[in-house]
Image (cartoon, rainbow, N blue to C red; front, top):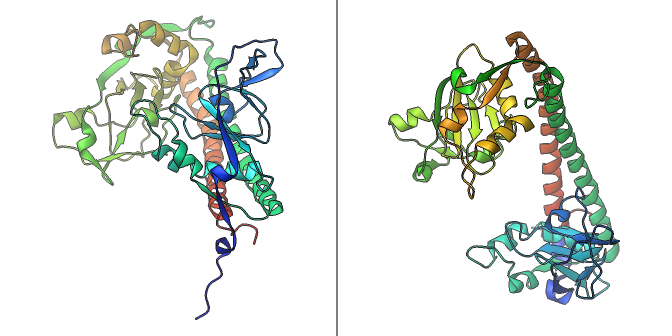
Length: 386
């Protein structure tokens, strides 16, 4: 039997400690008129909110050739590269100490090791990257030209993925602008719509169950959590399943088609409407079920609550101070504008067309995500360019 060729067996691997020098960042003083970019954790993912640092000899500066890693906190292990500036105290830089490694290639490789870095973090409360674990990672190093080729292929696949992500964001923004176009700003009510109190519109109101971890299962009923609720959108890409008890609590927390889900702790005002085709599902304690009387349109009310004006109402009602939270009295006291039901249904019809296009974009994103992840795994096994 002829041995199967394994490209990865022909590539030498080297530990991070033999390729890079690691330097921790330091907190910088912000200065809006500075020319020195101040790089923080959010900058590893996007360039939406540029900040600048005062010039100081204590600054830890990075070059485009350096790889940046989030060292502390909830985002520890996040990787960025190709940035120049001063890095903050929650970041570290990996500076090449050899000309045999192409930083974008190594950066992509370290992105593929995110779970490993997270699993080996130290610190019980705040995760910290483990220096020995990071320095001990081995990177397969083909010739420099091949590293550059692999990085170029992965960049192209990532660009496709990012375009799909941006398209989804545009459809989401279009849904919100459609609402404002048809009904105006809920806070100022420029069209003079009738105003109701949510209590008068509600048929049933409840919150979810605590302590259901004991019922978690690989299959069964859906268990909807706060991460499954967006801005007037049900998010079903991270599902939990339960085998619920046969009792009154399980029945009380079972959702029905047309129910509005509302986040009542942490990130207040996220909403979603339960569609008719959703399998049997329950909610946890961070969500509430708002079941309206039949004469009201749940998709309109859901969008209303998750709008900027609706969320401002919720912020005013939140009296917790430290940890955000709403009780039933708060929820019932929400002011809801009530345009003619025909107009609400017209909004639903138009928003569903936008949502249909958004679903197409989400399917495209899933394909581009799968493509990128597949290429990422193949790249470092020597299977991408051989």
